[in-house]
Length: 485
Ligand code: SAM
Ligand code: SF4
Image 1: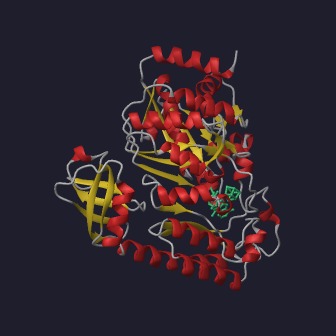
Image 2: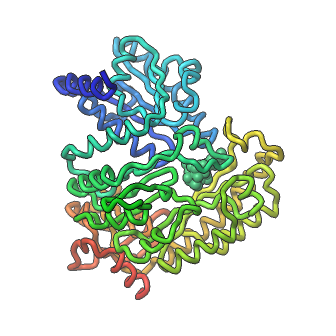
Image 3: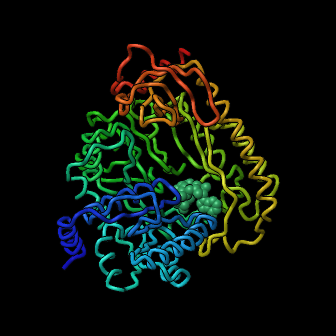
């Protein structure tokens, strides 16, 4: 019997059962893990599991982990310590609790996890979540499950079966994984080891899932991949498509107003993708394009395969195509061998590019990556001082960028209720949170909003009276608004 047949039988059996069990899911790390956690919940629902935020109530606990930096991995072990106490308390009350560790720590550390934390019943990597019902059955029969196969095709096939089923009404903004893994082997990064080689989902699978999402009320899709702009596939025309072409195809889907993608590598920004930013109204004017360092010496040591000048030229081409685009970035400070001058080169790059936002990290030695054994590791206090300086500059740039939206009118996708009564939270084209007073029935619509105040973490706006859902015209409207303001 194949894994899929076994999973289907387990699912069919469970569907007969009353949904009485609770799953507590904790997600660490990137959006790809968020997407995977949502899919694990989908797989568990027919097994009778509903989600809970209360650990004490959970019959099943899953930690969907991240291994990108040491801190992220260590958090998992401290959380397992807390879970052990709850599991013991439940056992005294005669109640079971199964514990699973999923994601990249599971992939990287395998059996070591159950050795360090014997309360763990299942360890499974990012390509195995669709097999959860089977893994759960094995664990319940007393077996310690460790599953770290790289069967990405089986996962994608499962996703596409799921996409063929009707979906319940969905939140207005959703993620859609189009690509997993990475072949770039930056010398600091564990992703090629934990997520495996680059694999793209087919055009058919992606389009079907996007159509289903749109039919279920999704108005904005963010395409996800560790290296999303390396996505490639064969189109309906039999030709090889890159991400740009895929975005053109997805923008034809009715009801889908907004497209985004993340995370991109500078080497894979091809002409068609840049042109898509010029031409597609649905493609939001926001791009996360990590450079990591502004020093050519460090870029070479990181194996980033581009220079700072090539990055500047790329940014010029992107801004020529989409002048109102907001750029975002990732930076690592304190990579082995980084001198004060190398760090200054990074600060100079940031001043020249002017980002709307950015993420920044102290270099973390990851076992098994080339960077971990490089000489000239940078002392922790130097890394901390550089990070603080860099973050101060980025914070100032983000503030300026947000302040530049004051008085502008642009389209906002209203996504959920805010903290205060009568308040809704939405998203600007540039991925900023926007708070407005508006009736709840406007959730899931795109509205023209005038920005009247700038807060620390969000913008505050007012609905433009009489304006209702500017379906499909968002980017065009924004462009005019942005330059009229
Ligand atoms: N694929 C993306 C790219 O090419 O930049 C990034 C993927 S990674 C999940 C997200 C970010 O984590 C990276 O851009 C990098 O800044 C950071 N990162 C990865 N490994 C790291 C390490 N060993 N130490 C500190 N930061 C790290
Ligand atoms: Fe990691 Fe991104 Fe480099 Fe791939 S391109 S190795 S995911 S940092």
